[in-house]
Image 1 (cartoon, rainbow, N blue to C red):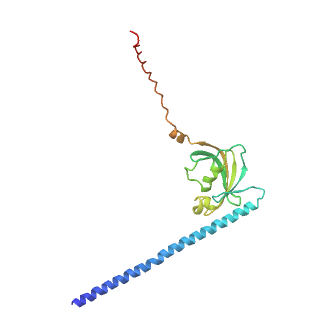
Image 2 (cartoon, rainbow, N blue to C red):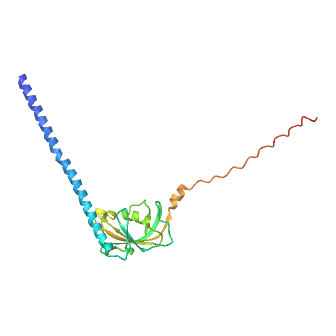
Length: 214
């Protein structure tokens, strides 16, 4: 009887070990598949960026009379109107007032200035198109600049859920009308003024008696 029980326990233990082994082996392909998916996705994104940049470079090459500037962020721009006297540019916390027009790379208007209306932007404190976050800080008052944004600097994979589609590069023309410091920020950091205390006059010292004369 004891031998029978021992045999049953041994069989159950062996079955448990086999089950665990199969379970671990079944999980390995999931991890492998996940890594493969990430690599495939990264490769696809690189090819997409390279393809869009090639299109933008062809546009630039086809307009040799227009001077385009490349940026470290991976987009290009040219001046339609450049201010020769203004030197200040919007900084974090400033309020920028601008107009803009959005086109596809073939020049077809997606959103006109009248569609969008005057724009107000708290610099680096609001969510706007990634390229514009950087581009507006390159502008001076009264300048008009046309930006060429690859899709990853525009609305990316999701588009804007309206007229701008998936992975769509854009041509965006911006006129910076003005920018000013945020009044609320200035109030918050304004130094406190203190009223100076009146000077306290010290009493005059008593005259010392001349000890040489009575």
